[in-house]
Image 1 (cartoon, rainbow, N blue to C red):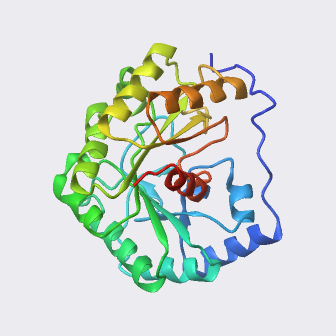
Image 2: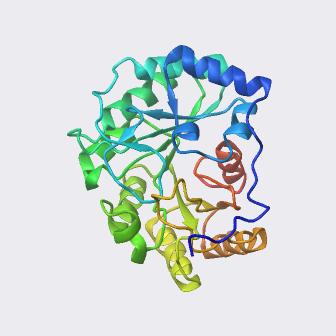
Amino acid sequence: MSNIIRPKWLKAKAPGGENYKKVKQILDTYGLHTGCESADCPNVGECFEELTATFMILGDTCTRSCQFCAVKKGETSPPDKEEPERISRAVKELGLRYVVITSVTRDDLPDGGAECFEETILSLKKNIPGCKVEVLIPDFKGSLESLEQVIKAGPDVLNHNVETIERLYQRVRPQADYRRSLGVIETALRLSANMVTKSGIMLGLGENADEVSQTLVDLVNAGCQLLTIGQYLRPSDRHFPVERYYSPEEFAYWGSRAEETGFKKVESGPLVRSSYHASVQYNQSKMVGLR
């Protein structure tokens, strides 16, 4: 199934506009990484042109070997204590009022990188009053202490992606656990009832309709409020093969199904990724009375 042809609708805007160059220059100036670039996001041209970016903390090298992800694997470096302040300066220069912070997974650190998340959130809240902060966090290997540390810093949205259905975890996410990921969302909402919870899934890895439906139910039952659904795109021949490409109409269907299941707002489309239109989705959720 790995040789199936990529369809026409999976074409994204090529990067290269003036704003794109501006964002690149600011990122280079402050020595920052983004999930947009490290994860080969197809929307990097569109988002940079809109002067937005998903900042990736704790370096650009991951300690896990997920079979769907383009982020570099290998030897890591110690956390950069100055990184949170540099992110604040870059965000201020870009004029952002909504910021998404993610990270590589750092199982080599005792706290999984929770301190860096905490310091980044606090720095943004201090230096840019009124700025909304969404964090896309790893599972911290199930550490309650690490999750508490992040939540106490006061993010507005806590995002943790389950990525795929439970059956595929051992093949696609061998160092992760489906139930543990659901537990991150459930525990986060219990720790902070005023915080918005979010997750994301990919389609095209070999799941069936019943399994997608069950994943939606599991997420809603865990307390997840916002959702992104996107097409899995194979980063290289070394990664997990694409089993199927879903049409835009099918993504519209699953978006509707997700909202019927209980999600407050859903972004669903072939090129949708975790932070795609994140501020719009958050603001729309507020309009329908979500916390």
